[in-house]
Amino acid sequence: MGLYPDRIPYWFSKLFSSYFWHGDRQNKRVYLTFDDGPTPEATDFVLRELAKQQFQATFFCIGDQVAKNPEIYDLIQEKGHRVGNHTFHHLNAWTASTDEYLNNVDQCAELVSSNLFRPPYGRITGKLTKGLKEKGYKIILWDVLSGDFDPSRTSGSCLTALKKNTRNGSVIVFHDSEKSFQQLQKILPPYLEFLRENGWASKAISVS
Image (cartoon, rainbow, N blue to C red):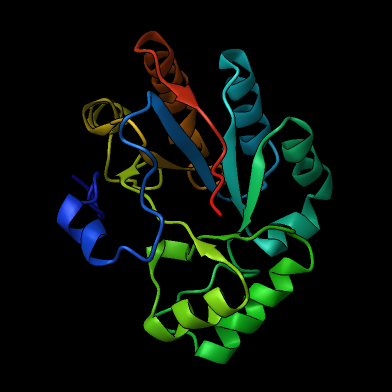
């Protein structure tokens, strides 16, 4: 295990049940998610790999990256995937003020039209939760982390952990960022093949 746990314990997600951690555990379906894009090369790679398996995913986009790469942002949606708000500048909820953070979310919303929100680093506060819900957002977290962002991990250890921790309904986090791209290239293709071979479908997140 690296900087963050590979899988969120059941008791923890139950304790903070107002957030979306995973989907239905009865259906053979997972929810692939990609944070911090859109990014040239990395996002294009992800879209190609998803298309090979006919998988859908959800991309939590940084507003600044959308402003820099609007054509890739449009392509994500053209390919049938869903987008979510990930703030404009990838803010840390534990260091930014509530007003600064919510204004940054609003700034991202000018470019990213979605009721889905994922807090960068998975960090959130009670005040921000209240403010985001008042704006109509559904806060999406995860129960499985790929580890692609962690330079202390090998691709083999990440892939082994992913296969071990994937369950029906899992929300799995990858990163279509420049920082994670080298690791992502090694992990994503074999993991998608693993999902297909074991009968899992991947759908975009949809919550009411």
